[in-house]
Image 1: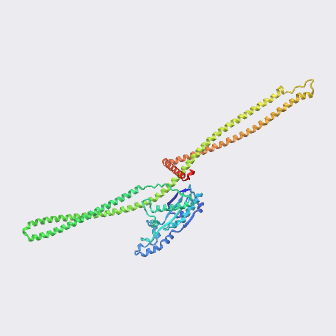
Image 2 (image 1 turned 135 degrees about the horizontal axis):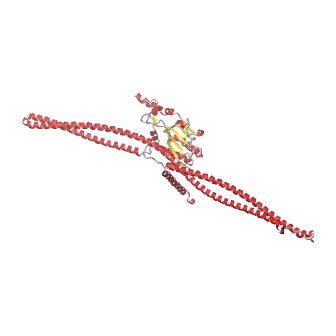
Image 3 (image 1 turned 90 degrees about the vertical axis):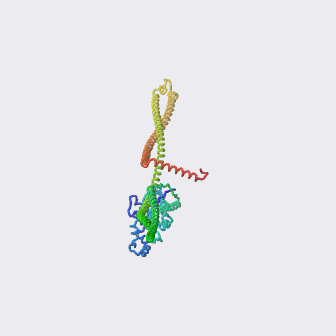
Length: 539
């Protein structure tokens, strides 16, 4: 026996799980078969898990605005963590593991054994509500838990964190499709598969159809590329600013050198008036050079301020891009959850399409068989009509025989050989009796005996023919009824075949044909595997 395993995120409706209210898809007459493993008040659970850690945290705080009065309300009103999480596990579907069937009872036993080991296997997931539902189409298990960690260096030393709780159990984030949650769900499915194998049920793993988040991934890559380009520009600008700083330093040094030269020139002017004209010209040149250097220095300072503003703007853009990137990652995680739900729905649709195809093939086979039986019944009907005609012919022959017999009887009244002659004038009574009357009487006795035997035989044949006629008429009526039933079944099969065509038009002929082809290939593969698994002598 092979069955699928479903592990999905639940809505977290504790009232629904405990049957505080009854939904439309719930059969309340079967609610007594549900299994309630635990049902604690979540507020009391938070007090039990976090009150001591909350006291230690508040004792360390020197600012009143950082004191936490109620950790439950802080998590409920916050956006970083959820109060609790719910996971739903199910084996098979409503067709192969229906809650009303023996397979449903087997699923109940397997899920109960799986739940008994869940808390020991997941010590960082505190289960406060767990319920196994048998009053819906397929048995399934709701598990509500609070993820927490101990020994935290940030915030409370014991605090709520799904990611850290799963990491403490060995599940760390990897690629986009291998998040902590997905890794943990896969591990729990394997644990459930091990329980199933102990009860003789294998895990039927079907191909998944993960949808690529191309648009989101493209935006994320574009954001990362923009951040990289901005970092590159930032480095270039920083390099330019450093270079300009060095140039300003050089210009300042040159200005200082020029100033020193000016002082030397003034001293030289005072010392050597004969060189006044030459020194005056050099002074004017130096003054012009000094002015140019001051203008250049002012221009470089202005450019430096502008580059600082651009650097500040680039930092703001980088921060905005990082925020956008975090939002995209959050959207990515949400889409991952939705993708998991779509995968489960796709698996269910694949199973329904496979079941529908199997029913269609069965209906086609039954239709062929019914058509063959219909043809055979028509042939039998023709044979019965022939036998009925032969029976009618025999009855007509018997009627003709009766008419001939009546005609022969009239012959006895008229034929001379059947007339008793008159006695002769000289014949004695004894002589007439012995020679004429007694032979005639004996002849009549023999004739009457033969006629009696023939009448009895004919009567028996008539009775036999009447019985045969009645049997044939009953057979004719029976086969007419069978033909009518076959016609009704053919019409029903035709209607179901029309329904299949409607499904093909709705879901698409190519999709249905693809599913049929894949299922046939899978069946051929399984048949080859079974054939190779058989001992060599039995192949």
